[in-house]
Image (cartoon, rainbow, N blue to C red):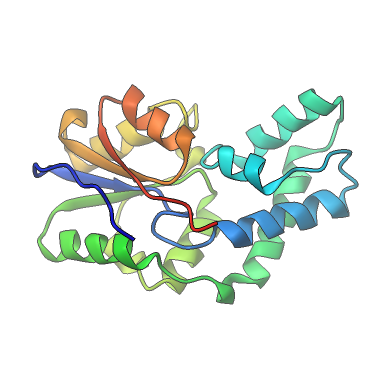
Length: 197
């Protein structure tokens, strides 16, 4: 995978997790599908819709689907089943090599790096650990840390604040449009990581 990096250095680097640092998106889609089937969801959520929604917190996704299809599935129950299914299949994922290599390089060079993910910490930490990346990151931001998830800028602004770096001096790595929109809203440059779908 070839990434189009800006030609300048930055003071801070913020990485999404799923689909960016860790090649976990296919597994997340299977987990969603298993949870929807288990709970009798009245919709057929396609893989294209799943990828278009990348970075949006799970419970928000369920609420939006409920509204669109006139359903009343419990976002917490859908999320819990999905998370449990994902955890049972965690051994199937690996790092996205080109992005992981950059994260390791920045860490080795003493650059400020962080993770800002739309997934819960209970999923992010084991995913990073499985990919051999968890020890690189002291700062991990998840939806529990902010009032608004992606595409709002809150997660990236909090990550920048915790790194002690001005937003305009941060570079974001993202695989989802919601994340790119969040980076733009935060006044940050971004690098799009192509999906492996």
